Length: 262
Length: 241
Image (spheres, rainbow over the protein chains, first blue to last red):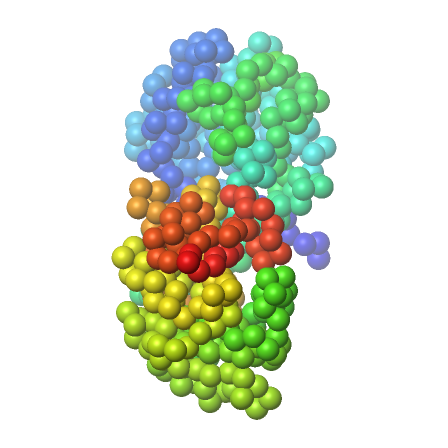
């Protein structure tokens, strides 16, 4: 049997673990969506325009963007996340403007209903590129391109390789509700691949009951590499920022945003 | 630290020996190691041929260390305990060629405590003697605020939560100790420490106030030039007079 890709382990086999991570991040979507709206407006996406958000998780950006008038389509690998996203969109009163589908980033064009396209903008947020090899990333960017109208944009929000190199921290700890996430990180400078071991525990009093250990492997990009990747994927790189606030890119900023135009 | 956790052996005894030899303090010389903890370095330095007096406030640790002194160095190594505010607690006539204060022996109490400790040490140094301090480098911790680390020690896992306050220079460390049962972590005990971290200039000032004159500060035992990337400061001082 072929080894399972970690995304399947984490998002398909044990979605309940990462669902908790998403639920805890839900409240941050409000402000990020406001910032995203400013980015969309800067690049000429009309009010009420069509937005494609992949992978969308539980829709913490899309549902918020729908609330301010955009028509959004979200796609995620995990049926659990998609059904939660659909439920949240209904709760927020935007089920008619924010729709969600199960699908694979690598085969986006077959997933999204033809009637939903073309989009004015596509979003790839929260370090959701680099999960496979670089050639696959190029194909993924081409998939977005098939669904976005000429002149439309792609916004990528992703970890900044330069920051990771400068501020490398080999271990990490995060608590999401009763879930504890402990991370051991390794960065291969030659291949730019992070090889991490993620361990998830559930708090049980003072003890930590083990839920899941997943080896995570993904590629991280510096800004110039992302721009080159955009070109290879059929996009014209425009501006780049350090984050959602459109601050200047910096080696000391953990994130970066690049915007490509089709 | 719970029973069952065995500290790994220290690797830097040889580096310390080379550092001392470059100062003309060769095996056979008299060293004072204070506070010595459970004597891991003291044993190594005695094995290297030094005459070592090792003092620590932890009486239980000293009792255990005394029992475990290797036979070969029993004549060269003497453990003693003394209360923290009387360290090194030796007789007035005791004089050493070098005094070693390792593993961030300063900054564990008030600044006045540190000065009083350094002044007491100055009474036990020979005129040509050396004081060697091994301190955490404030600039290292200030420039990379890593909030978490975990260490595996045998079947135990230690989680360390760190916070550094740049205003006070205090590094607060909290530790949770777990035992690994399968992949689960069973909580065993907690502990914490607050350490005041110093810049090389702070250290020089403290030494100047307490009967010492700073000779050099390095980023490691091999006398690397200090940068913010060095976790430790190795400080060398001589008696001021």
